Length: 87
Image (cartoon, rainbow, N blue to C red; front, side, top):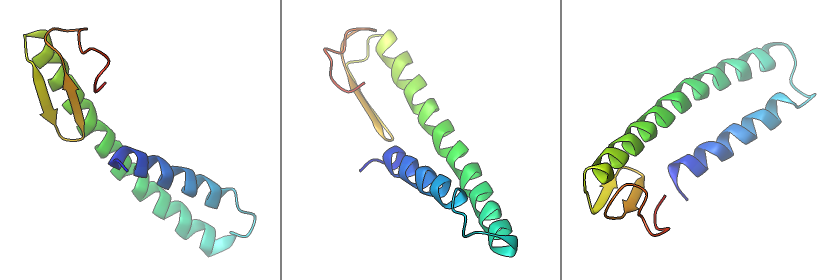
């Protein structure tokens, strides 16, 4: 499972927790603090992956044949010609 898929699962689970009627008072406050921390880390993960994707797009635009960057892999000879592989 990719990091982005795991992140999506964590965020979905946190949404379920927030929707729980069982959380009140200090427990709810603590869970909100925890979710805010997860949200900040999530933003950084998405930002890093966006940067990886941008680098792949530039490489392919200028004739790159294969790029392995972080969590993303794209193959192709020219921009828009990845033969349905990778992205």
